[in-house]
Amino acid sequence: MAHVHTMGGSMLKNEMYYILSGTYMIGISQSTIEKVLIALPADIKPEYLYHSYPEHSVNVEQCAIARRYVTVSEFGQFVEETGFVTQAEKDGWSWTWEGGWTKKQGLSWQKPFGIPELDGLYVTHADTMCVLQISCNDARAYCTYLSQKIGERVSLPTEYMWEAFATVAGIPGMDQCKELSPKKNNYNLFDYCMLLIELTKKEKVLPGMVWEWTDSYFAGYPGCLPHKEYGTTYKVLRGGSYFSHPLQRAREYRFRRCPTARSPFYTFRICVMKD
Figure 1 (cartoon, rainbow, N blue to C red):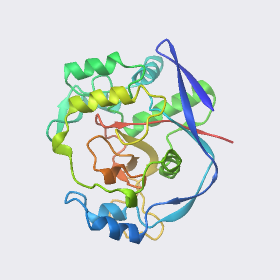
Figure 2 (spheres, rainbow, N blue to C red):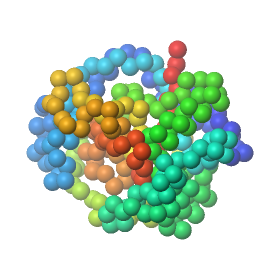
Figure 3 (cartoon, helix red, strand yellow):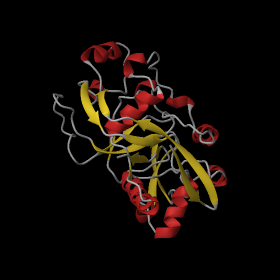
Figure 4 (tube, rainbow, N blue to C red):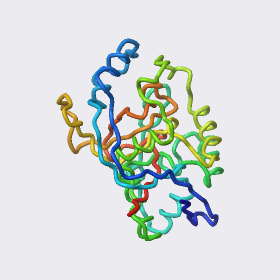
């Protein structure tokens, strides 16, 4: 399946991964937790592993998930046609990384870094670069717009659909993670931006560079241990980012944030439901 968007005056082709309807195994087993706990980094709490526990079967509807992220140009056309104002623009600030998490004025999907050189590169490569500083609510609004525009059921993937997609795409599971050492101190926004620009030029962009929003609430799995954060307050991100531990890039790892949260490490890819 190929889907073509007209965005920013150019035709961009976004190939899709087919996810066949059926039963998929989701989450991790107790044996996987025991294996990972042996070398767990100090800043990843054991409870984070149990958010992905227990492993269980889930029926997933047939769908197609984009091989590439939504681009700056694509999101820009949405804004131009609808007048949509993102959460960061409404609030006048957003989060970024400057040796630690920093709340910074003036950041948005148009200026995700607050560093002129990087924001300039981001805009220069708008036709391929993924849109950043996007909240879950912003991403859902884009999907609603695109559904109306192309006449198909477009949404964010649920986290179960996302995990099925990650399995199809060959993303390793937690039990396959061989290196769990933290590496944040070696990373900076310049390296991140340059690598993301190169990766997003490709027809297929695998998870692992930018956290990806799903349309699922952060609920506990059937038979899980209770946790105070489960419920309908947070939405789930998947995939990990450039600053993440390898464990967090595993296909089962769950990360939660408020649906209004945004940073230069959050983006999304679309899901098209198939009858």
